[in-house]
Image (tube, rainbow, N blue to C red; front, side):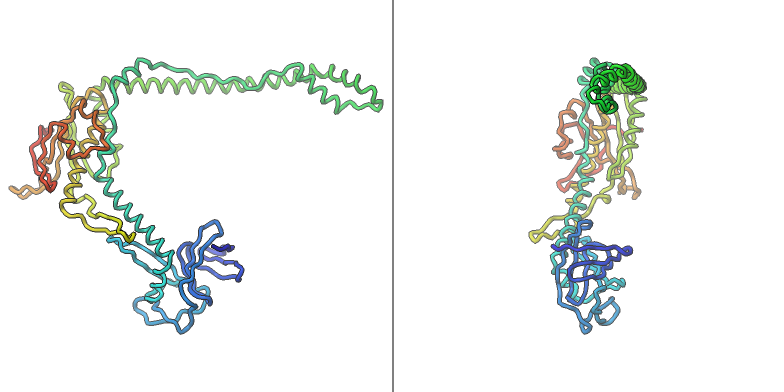
Length: 441
């Protein structure tokens, strides 16, 4: 590592000062190359620190050395000019292979294989490729998780008993006023201050008289100083109390509002009616942001405390089709998933969605004892040739069993067995069309 001073004279244009003299840099900070009399260098740095690394990757260029400035041109000499710079662009393609594009500071693409190989053999190039590969790998894996791990976001159910106890203990609270921090001035404080003033102001040429004169000064000025200090203290205290009055009023209003809001929420959870349930479901559906597309129809039956839900599920065509793994070499391998893998992840996704929605809806009110969720997708009807809504599962979640599950650890497909359900799934995870428990009219 070396030290250098970099002076900006225009956007993308810098003067570099170092022990060897001054040079001109053109282009963005980061991975860039400079051709000069001393050879070809790869320059990298930490912006804002003055620290950089300069790695020589080739000998000094001369006018007889050639390169292609673009794909359609003939060989051209590289000028022996310190201003000549190569800008490197590194990417990772869809299959995880690194790609390199190099251009000079005129925007012409460099295709000279010797130069490109020198770049590829540089440590900075390898480090950048590794960073990009890891980012690509994370991107693919996170995309997969956003589809198949929806069930892990299922909220835990609120305990009605805990809320009832909380409601019993619920009380309104009041703002506790703060006390004025300054102490009321005392006579002795005023006397002490008057004494200091006496030393400063009473200096008789007949020094032996100073003690008596200063005592008279203190005796005379102490009442005045005490009054001034007391008046100032009372004024400050009055201003402080006025502020506390305003704060007390506002805080008490907030505390009362919080109390009423919490009480209402607990009451609604315990005693929620059809209107409340409907409003809450609408609010929940508007707030949901999932990687998959869906639509929901619902109906609440107060008599049997059951919420009926129909979900228009995402299509298998929407599932991420790539898989990725890191090889021993450190590179990544990106391949297309086979049909079994796609079907398994799709089944996990759509089954997981039912747990996610069941958790959200159970938490609206404890009056909902059962949630029946039926999921359907669009498929070609082999009898008519038309695209129809066809159900692939129907499940009855019961609150008592649902609240015992560890949602983050379940396999959504296997977890269906905890509840009464209708689902026909093959060994290759194909979901067959079924007749649900009861479709919403």
